[in-house]
Image (cartoon, rainbow, N blue to C red; front, side):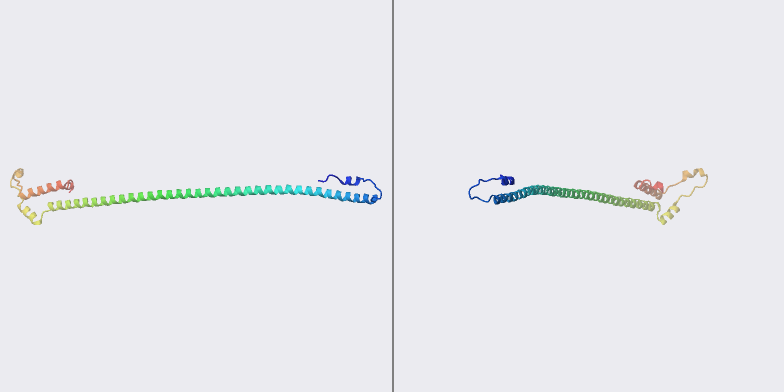
Length: 203
């Protein structure tokens, strides 16, 4: 650090001696040295000021760099969080979709099973209805067969039918005779009525 100034150089005095330096030359040299020293000091101050400013700018740049670095780190963290959340949301969406699909499939399978059961029941009802109808028809046919004897039987029955008695009509009931064939026909009708109740009455 400089401990003297240009003014000190100018005001500096020296003792005189015999046959010493030329005083005028010494004074001129000191004045020139003072001016040069003053110029150097001024440049030094300017350099120090510029260095201070440069340091301030460098500090600002470093601060900005640190801020940018922090912002980049924060952006990376936020991006990573968004990515992880997106993956979780996607997995949750897929899981929900799979669950809905399984439920829909289970519902469809249950519906198909119910329809199959209904179809089987309808087929069973159809078979039962056909069987019952066939039995009724067979019963009717048997009844018709029993109620409609062969033609030769009808002719013999007609020929054997009792003739109304002559005389007083009030005595007809007393002289009415029932043949063996009539008794057999009555037994047959009674058997059919027991086998298929309601059919004989409807006829």
